[in-house]
Image (cartoon, rainbow, N blue to C red; front, side):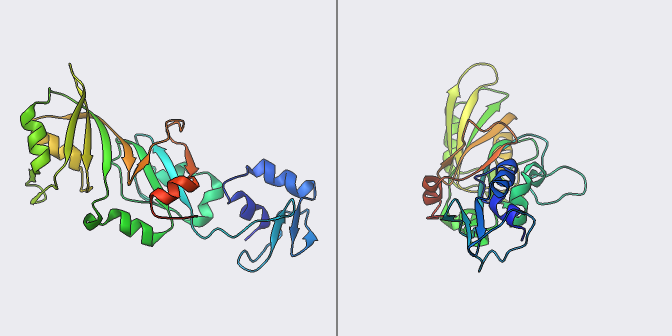
Length: 239
């Protein structure tokens, strides 16, 4: 791997900052000052230092994205752009993939990683990992709807009954806003649950996943690495 890509891949420094580090002779590899960022290193065995501080090799990356509408939650697609197309170049060498999926027109919190073990844990129905959405719907919500979500709704298209969920009214009126909490993520699940209650989802945004809350400072399409605190929430001490 190129030394400049290694440093940029830490997700802390911009490519311009990394370029300046080499110009200012702040980078050493195995004790020798390096001014050319294109030099190749063995990230697992070489000792790379920046300002006399060792930069450790990062095997996994954990990213939070504020997904915009119009993007497929996949690594590639022959027809539509994917969430991978939104990632900055410095994360590409990790080969991250989305943990689960949000529909093309659904926005909000999406976790991306190259940690397959973690992804499997977070997506396992047995773990009952909570997912919270804000949904704007076409018709009013009543107590019968809330009860139906709590008991589970039969979806004939997939021949299954959803796990118990929680439906909470946030704002009443025309096209009311509600909060939906579910512990599984089957195909179009939230939309199908409302359809079976003779209602229609007009807008859907995921705000929480596995205890992580969407960073509202992230504009749609932006991404950042998880903080140490957020890593602990999902069961990882460090990246």
